[in-house]
Length: 220
Image (cartoon, rainbow, N blue to C red; front, side):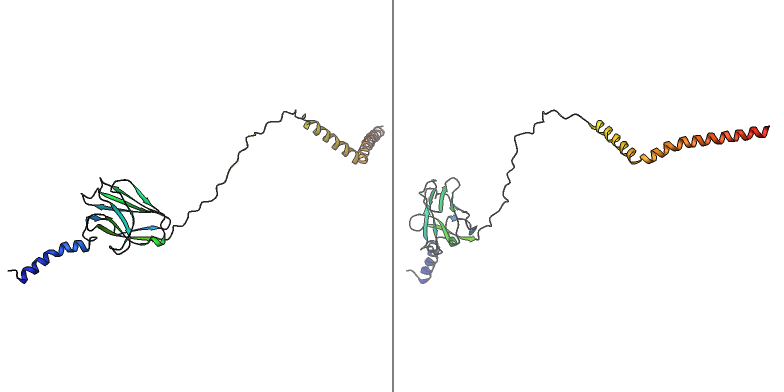
């Protein structure tokens, strides 16, 4: 006879399997980051890991906070071949037991809750990831490049004969011209000088003659 205590014990033993069926994302063989973030226009990569034995199963990436109603965006074929649909790609690595999801050209509308999961019989395995999208990074501006041009034509020395050096002749002519100008401007002074010299000589000789004559008369 089964008592109420035995029924209650059996019910308690059934709770863990039931929880695994109801909440597969919390108690599953799939793990990964709880959240990732990226900027508008950039790409973001999510790596989800799984336990041994799930290598050949299909992997998928779906969007939506509710496990039962999330929309599958892309899934693999069970091989390691990369699959892409629109801006989302997925690729499995059996040796590392990791499948990678890449979201390209992020938009603000891409911010949501997602699931990375494994397709299997009865209930899939999954792990929830929150994706945050921030504003676009400011563009880096650089000053315009200045183009430097170089002339390939070198200046050749002139082969024309140089004019003769006339510096000495010019100096002599300038000196002669200065002397002539001085003589012309001082003609009266020059004439007076030439007239004074004979007069002074004559006067000096006259004084000497007179003084001699006076000496002779005194002696007599």
